[in-house]
Length: 189
Image (cartoon, rainbow, N blue to C red; front, side, top):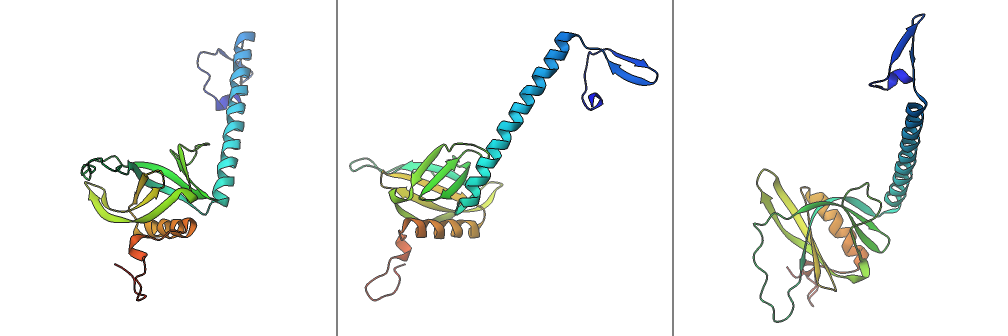
């Protein structure tokens, strides 16, 4: 078993072809303490993975999207500057679970960085696709909350974006501007 570890600085003695390690009481206690710490970290990581697994199994949709947030301009404020050249898109792990959208930094995080109730979402819709240097085309959509916070989300897959849009529009019971019906029954485009 000790051959699996690289125990630097420990004296090895060979007797009858067998290797043995001579440890002082302090070194032995130190190794026991390290093993206890490793077992504790392993138990913590296992509980963490079980927690994440439980959330993902019951989630309607989850995955990595690039996210940036914007606040809707208040009445009387100047229009927001054109920020299409600013690359402030950050990858986030998004989970649509129950009546809430959770925004995690990583898929292994225990608690989300942000969350929004679906009942607070007032509008969900498509945004124009865009191309970043060395990244290819990204397809995007937005989520607008009643507080005026606008989450802009993007992904390299049009199918992924369409899936998120469909799930959010169904879950939030909102329609995008492009899906509004005009009185004659045709769709307003």
